Length: 323
Image 1 (tube, rainbow, N blue to C red):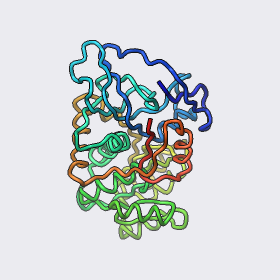
Image 2: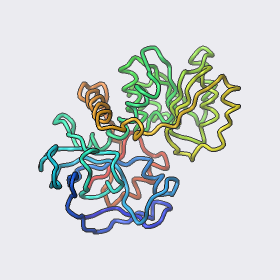
Image 3: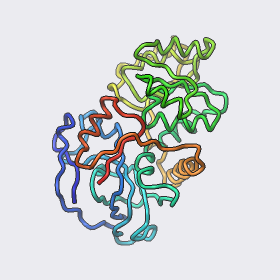
Image 4: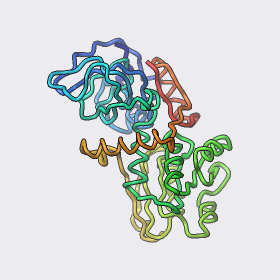
């Protein structure tokens, strides 16, 4: 079996394609032959050491494929079933993986492997952001950073279906056009415009009730400036580095602001909630309200190049690996 591993933290060059033996699935596990694998910023956080990882180890959390074998006592799935998975142990960057059944979901015929691998983690993230972290409803104007990214393009579409107006930040006119095509109401090019000034213009000076920010350190202060009194700052990523030294007095000074740092695992923390969120995501994909845009496809052996492109913000939509 081919698998991407790393034995030390660092740049993309620490990723190595190795041949290894995969043990038979244990009790409560299934073996999945990957057809497509998701690439996400959280993978980079583990590679660089921002998030601690036991080494040597595998890379990646998300994929889709066909069940090749089942472990003892597994009754939920059979060989040949089409499935997708997320939330399990690292190691998805591989030809095959063993996964516990509690992180595996059946894949409807209407959803192909690439869509599932590109959209499960990002789509579930959007599900909890728009429906649970803050209940975005028709008429709300919200700010979403990195609107042309994998999460951003899903959020633009889902928000549009809800009647929510997305103000999306982007770095180029091409990305602005992509975000608008996927449902953004307005876009702001942060390389040449002041994000807080434009947000205030677009909201008649009121600001937005919520900011969704996966960029982190570079956008923290501007994000706070965009919020209404008692607004919610949702910091769900660290693409530019982690936010440090949060000043609680500043939250008070800017209008009794709220801040949260959510993660998928805390929302999909039971099988029931996980399945409900997946059903919600698959439902909006099947209805056509949300399309999972895949901007980049790389061979498994080129995982380092895929991560480099993602880190350099040279991507739009989702990035996947093909084994």
